[in-house]
Image 1 (tube, rainbow, N blue to C red):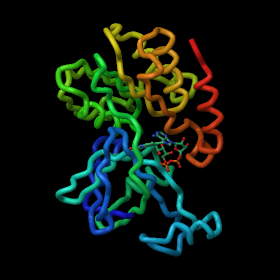
Image 2 (cartoon, helix red, strand yellow):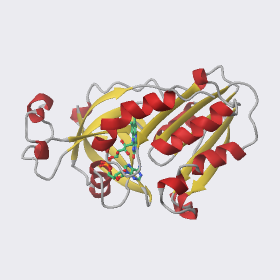
Image 3 (cartoon, helix red, strand yellow):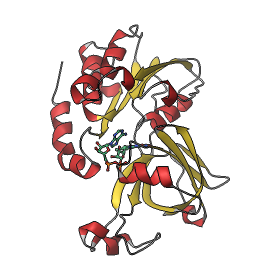
Image 4 (cartoon, rainbow, N blue to C red):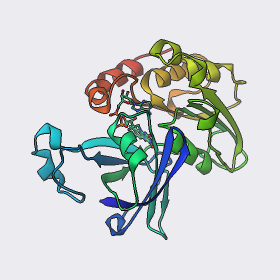
Length: 269
Ligand SMILES: Cc1cc2nc3c(=O)[nH]c(=O)nc-3n(C[C@H](O)[C@H](O)[C@H](O)COP(=O)(O)OP(=O)(O)OC[C@H]3O[C@@H](n4cnc5c(N)ncnc54)[C@H](O)[C@@H]3O)c2cc1C
């Protein structure tokens, strides 16, 4: 399946909205969960082929010509217009997904598989907590929009600075806390606890909390520790996923991600 860029919008200095359309999206399955994602193929400069291509055939090509897979959340699917919206974090002049989004122009094509699904805010929970950085902001925005009316929805999002903030909406009783990286050094040591410290300082929520904690690996791990240690959220109501790892590209990260997740899941409090 593939889409053609209809328009782009620089939502913030770090986040680019890309809207895809065209006949390559015919048959796209509407997401049934808040963090549905597509597995996109970003082409290297050496690629001597165009979208659409045959997945099995390009897998046989030398490494420098094969596409680079990157998972990106479905920020929106407009079935009537046949338009798929992706919000992609641009993080300097690096990364296949980030750079592609920065330079995307109408008519450019993006091939992908999916969507695949995961988390849905539990309708029976007493409240909701959604935590992450720009990579999880698209999913967090959908989570907030899909949360039930009238219940407390707490969102904690890390962005570079105030210019990175976007408007979020929810039928719930929404409280958004923006956390700025610019206030700290950009090292693992300085940033790992940034979200966790903010979450720990929040007033303790009442009742059962359904939580979604996705984003940078060390940061999501630190938030998970706070939520479980302080008994703010129980494991059954926690969706925690390390989308990416500071200092590693996606290929390096996927090579060790399984071990990381096993280690994190073994942590009990
Ligand atoms: C299920 C799922 C859904 C996701 N949804 C989204 C989404 O909707 N939007 C989105 O932007 N990302 C999303 N991500 C994260 C995204 O797939 C990764 O961040 C991916 O590594 C980005 O690829 P890239 O080619 O831009 O950078 P890479 O080639 O993977 O990395 C290049 C360099 O950039 C760094 N880097 C990677 N991501 C970031 C970042 N967010 N901020 C700062 N530095 C970074 C790496 O550590 C590396 O040093 C999702 C991940 C998963 C697993």
